[in-house]
Length: 351
Image 1 (spheres, one colour):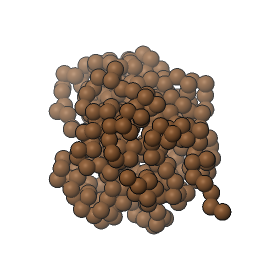
Image 2 (tube, one colour):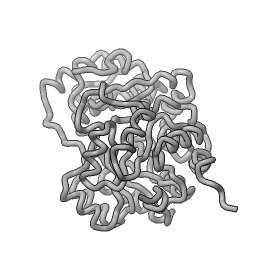
Image 3 (cartoon, one colour):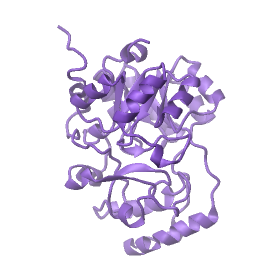
Image 4 (tube, helix red, strand yellow):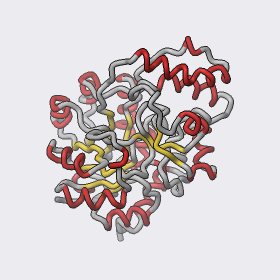
């Protein structure tokens, strides 16, 4: 088994985590040009928007980059559950002066599909990663057809083994500390989720492919620590949220810089699936976990309108403030500088 850098063509063992909603191509370009593996999240993008972002990446870097997709199964809408969810949110709509009857339902996030592969094949990205398991074999073979390396997240040893048997080139070991959506797919039991420093060595022992550590890693010392446990590389998201290349909203940036950023929780109130966010009013009053939220990603539509109305007033009360448990690496500095700082001590500078 060679090094991560040799396998994926990067100079540094650093992957910028794909973070839908807080970044576009600019962050991916900056990280790739700095020697890491920049990532473009596509779960919230239309086919045309994805094409535009990929064109921007191809026009700005010759370095490897990663394109990320969700591969969940779209749920069947449940009218009764959607109605109950909106009734639970009605007091907030009234408070913000929003007409709940005019808020359309919507999927929120799109799973990987043949339409997306058709567009993706025009650009042939060198790395494609997935969250929530893997897509159907036919879709996966189309991705492999142009020589792309495949990554996916595992939150347990069983998930890592499952991914390895299906031919992934590396496994991302997503610890419980990680911000954003949990990548679990074999079980919804959150008691089975492990912290990064417990999960990484167990997955390293269980699989032969390279293991990428993710969750709670915020600086070079953290990178070195997980690599000492056998990780071949690290995936880091939260540390990039304040970079000028990120599209993180003003209210989200303010929250990341506050004392409240030390308090995060797994919550399903924003999308219907557990994800780690800074705790705000909505998480406190409706969650963190509620049975009322429609299945992922159908809970999103009703919350989004509340978010928009509140953010227009400068409030983060209803915003998904995605962040990991360690925000100490968040700095308003260029992404290239963050990437180089993370790799200090792991990769020796050239003479």
